[in-house]
Each structure stands twice: as C-alpha cells, then as structure tokens.
Image (tube, rainbow, N blue to C red; front, top):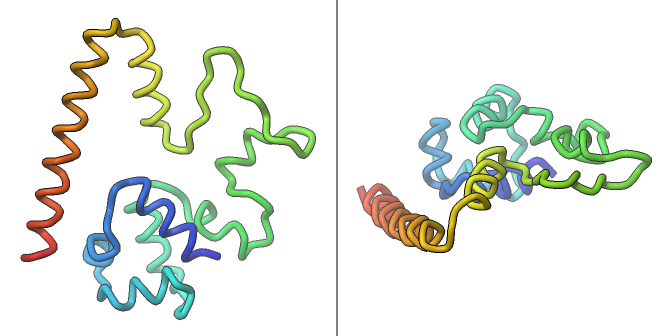
Length: 136
C-alpha cells in the first residue's frame, strides 16, 4: 500500500506527518487519509511526496504497479533471494546511512564517542525545533 510506504520513508527521513503535509501543501488531515489509505494519493501529489522523501514514485507505488519489491531493493535480489552484502558493503535503503556507517568504521574509540555525543545533541536540537514548528 502506498500509504504504508510513505509512512515508513517519512519516518526514515525524520519528518512528522504534519511537516510532510506542509511541505507538499496539503492539510494534515488529508495527509493522514493518504497514509491510512482512506484516500487515494493523486499522481501529482505522489510526485511531490517522492521529491520530499528523496525517492521515486515507483519506490512508493511498487505494490500497486504489480512489482513484488521496491525498485531500490530489487537491485539486491538475485535468484529470488535477497543478496548478501559483499565484504565491507552495507545495505541500508538510505545511501547516507551507508556513508555514516562506513565513516564510523574507520574512527578510533574516542572519535566514535565524540560522534555519538554530537549525534545525540543533534537529535535533541532537531526534536526541539520540530516541537517549535508544530506549535507555530
């Protein structure tokens, strides 16, 4: 279902339903209906959602198009099975996650602890600004 894929990808990029609604210029209630499947997402709106979520329309609507798996996953499938990652290869859906983990692997323990502290701080700051935006 398109709505479930939108929810998963929206959460992956750290957006609330209200924020996504604002970014694609629809009411939060409408966004809720799209995500729950109560209302079908028009193609132009779906294209805007895909743009905001940094994926393709096909990645969001693969089930409705009769495709068994999302196109980004398909490249990892061979002989009907999910391919095992090659030595040193990461397989996150978001390429930034791959890069983050690859960079972390090369750091020493102290540097890793500093990165973790920084990431925790960023998470708190992001949460604060998200709360401020939702109130305003």
